[in-house]
Length: 201
Length: 372
Image (cartoon, rainbow over all chains, first blue to last red; front, side, top):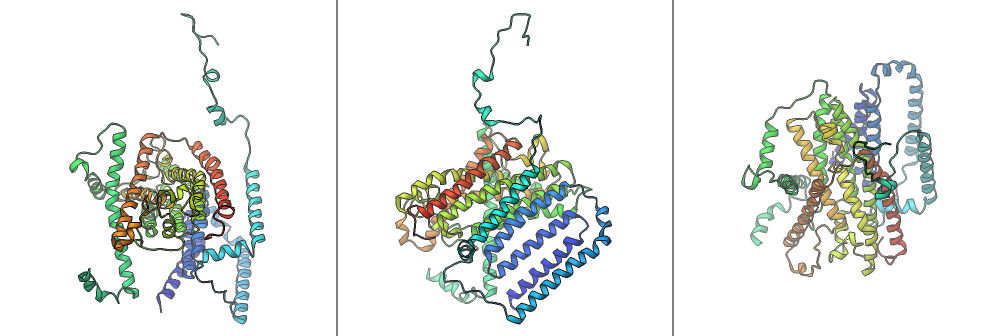
């Protein structure tokens, strides 16, 4: 067995095991940490495939940003562990159906690939890294789909902001422009109080 | 030279084998780690000395001549203390957190090109790798803060997570402007394209397109400033050291840490700072390239060419570290909402516009038809 195969089996074993731990860990924070490990080993599998750009994107986007927010939310929420366990039997049939559908879909795909044979990718022209290749495909052949995906994300982002943005009346806000525009005249008042009287407002 | 090659000759067949490659890489990694750690020891001292001089103090001056061995005394002190794990702490995550911090901080150095050919792993997506590693650094802090099972560390961890995620976005966009300018994600290629004098450095618009490239300074110089400030925030340095603001949070995420785990957090922080200095030198200030044209290098032996580049790289890193230290000495701490405002409302739009401007410059400017 060569080193590549060894690395593949080690990485996929870690990925599968930590994915199992994501759903079976008792502590939700541990679940998120195992999820991060899963992402990480999947990134390793991408590197083995020679897709280093995708691997780095997976790490930057999912591990570096998305999972941090997951962790943030899970830590902030005061999760009651025992109540999480209670619904397990009730949700079991539903979860089993979803899992079954997923398994059937994967089986169908695998069978189709096995019957027809995997379509080999067009070989990269010499001197073109896979980053450049992805860029070329994304910005030429699939340009409109790419833009449409960006538009969908933009709409989702605006939706999230609209849902959560609310201006409470009575909250003091800092207006930096107004602060820096203050002059001696507008920000200061010079008074000469008479002796024994002080300042009367 | 002939004696050296005679000694090395029996190994020529050994190095390309898988075992030889592994041995060679391990030697490289050990060499860089050891040299880096020793340098960090003195850089730490320099940090304290610079800070002291800015405040008209003497700084550490007792251990060794001029206090040079202070860091080693501190190391001994940390190592010989007892590791205290708080009663309610998640023990595994508590110990794991400083280890993750240190491993990630050291891991970033794997792709840093110190000099022509002096790099452990010259990968095509080196800059993305660096970005990924620096964005993962937040895990050590947030895990340490959570696992301590105590209020101050937890608040410090949350602050740090929010802060680092916010400033990563602008760092990402600044990196994209550099990638657009050099047309490559390979750090060695990015450095090579800045050859020929300081006016060819990326901060002055990169080395392509004749003198016209200087126009891009208008965008790239502010981008360098944005990168430097974001690097301060990314490494939790003052004025952005809110995660460990002692007046509010005692010591933030590291309150419960003592002994070697604390040492590891401390070390990771400094390794990350020097890594950021190396990044800014490579991305904007030509890495190992000299600020003057270097036609004389053509007659030098490859080793001396590399050594020449290494010295220049080290000088640049040290200069940027000096800037980090001075900022710590002279700038007051930000308030948290101002920090968020700066990241999201000023840096993010500015760097976004800069990405569009540099992309337009590449497509419609005088560089049209060259390279990418």
